[in-house]
Image 1 (cartoon, rainbow, N blue to C red):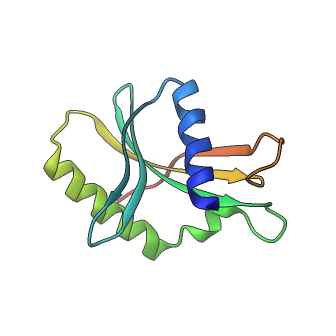
Image 2: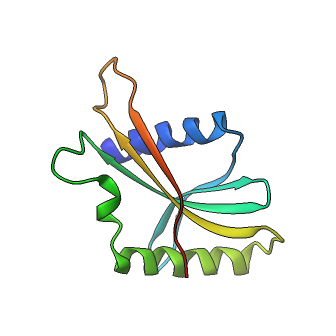
Length: 116
């Protein structure tokens, strides 16, 4: 499954950069947050977009304003359930590649990609 493969690649990427995974696939009535991670003073809500390539459009273009609002609503619910002093941040990670190949996926991390 392309999405799960991309999310795993994004999680490994984040952990190598010093992020600590707090939760994955947090589902609410508003929608799902792919990865919730902690890094320094931030609690980071990560939307992962996986595509074979960016030939036709960048993966981040599929994180529409409506999708952003659903992620923000889901993050607000998570924050009510898990109080923290950390500052919330919304990132998008683009994963380009094909599952099952030897090639390492290309990852583009957009910090503070949107906010509310």
